[in-house]
Amino acid sequence: MSDPILHFHGAAGSVTGSCFLLEFGKARILVDCGMFQGSKTEKELNYRPFPFEPSSIDCVLLTHAHIDHSGLLPKLAKNGFSGPIFATPATIDLCSIMLQDSGHIQESEVEQLNRRNRWRSREPVEAIYTADDARRLMPQFRGVDYGQWQAATEGVRFRFWNSGHLLGAASIELETAGEQDRRRILFSGDIGPQTKLLERPPEAPADVDYLVCESTYGDRERDEYTTQARRLRLQEIVAKAYQSNGVLLIPSFAVERTQEVLTDLIALMDQGTLARCPVVIDSPLASRATNVFKKHARSAINGEAFIRGLNAPNVGFTESAEQSKALDFVTGFHIIIAASGMCEAGRIRHRLRNWLWRPECTVLIVGFQAAGTLGRVLQEGASVVRIQGDEIKVRATIAVLDAYSGHADASELQEWVTQRRPIHKGLFLVHGEEPARHAMAARLKQLVPVAITFPCLDAGYRLTDTFAEPIVPPAYPRLQPEEAGHADWHNEYQNLLLDMSDRLSRAADRKHRDVILRRLRRALEAGTDSERNRRNENAVN
Image (cartoon, rainbow, N blue to C red; front, side):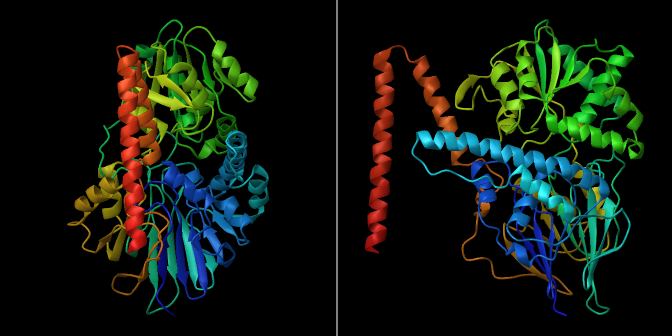
């Protein structure tokens, strides 16, 4: 049997789009099939064909339900994949609601885009997939419990280990057959921190040949937070945000982060350390996810506290668009938790559009914000942003509380990796931006005496008996390495528009505004001439 070949078709130099293809003999196994998020350049990859033939995939092994790991599964099936998708039972429960919600978002966003395209005489765009596509996918899921060996295909078996990241999340231990040429490969999935409200600490086996490890927080250390310390910090932020007609907006991932924040808020109110106020979950997905968490509450380490928070009399959920819009008329201080966590979609964008310009608003960031997202722009201190085409001055207070992260920080990742020793042949660092990958490699190079590799998008490696051997890269990569995990020209263009508007509004009079506009036109004309000359030179050569 030939050596396995591993291809990195996502989460390579960035934190989204997780997708790894393992070839072993005739077997073709996909680990995750996630959606790209972040900059528009990366998100455009979701609309392109897969870099492999979907119908050739034998099965998918899914680490967890987050959309950056599962979000392109309906597209995969729509394009010809008909095999099983192996996941933990809790992950299947979450995917049953999250993938349909994602399909609904695709349909809604494309409908709005096509309306604008008609005005601009542009061609219509088709949704990546629909909610019906997601529903049709669900019979392909197969539940596998933690610790249970399961055949993936002939000659390949796997088992799931609790990764501590999310309800049902798993690391995947994979083993190819053969006495002399057996390979043990461990895919970390997303690793949770040592202390998490609803999840147990991560577990995984030691003594592997190859480790494929996430590095999201490879360059960051978080403050150590006990449950008491985390709630105290949350109490301070809420108290500071309190204004008689104000709001605390919490952009939050609908699955688990919302449930964690809600549990802590109600615990503080029950203790009397926070004044009781309305807490509204403005996300249909979060409402449905909460029901999944209720189903699995007995397995959660703080399940009873979660149920108490859920049943509190001041907690409400919005389902319809009309109920959500009615929140604009709520008076008195209140707290709204809304998706999406990176402010890229969902009802949080309407909430931000309505409140960011008001000083009586506080926005609390409680999760990782990928480069190029509105959440990252706000976190980095933007004074003006654009939402749904409108320019909005940011007068709200932006606060950050990193205690709810679902990812291990640098020290926790280092500890998790060293506990996997011996790692015999190679370590791949994925699911991290470049600074995070380099920082994590610097930590590990003395502790793990094997080659540490930073795969780029669509790179492939032959997993030999001694080391990972690169194979010939694709002639036309979907993304250049420098484009992954970074803000792109779309972000720069939006910043330029905001800067232009600000400069023009501050100009003393019409004469000064005319001078600014003339200079801009000259710069554009010079750029056009330069591009025309470059094309002419290329044509001659």
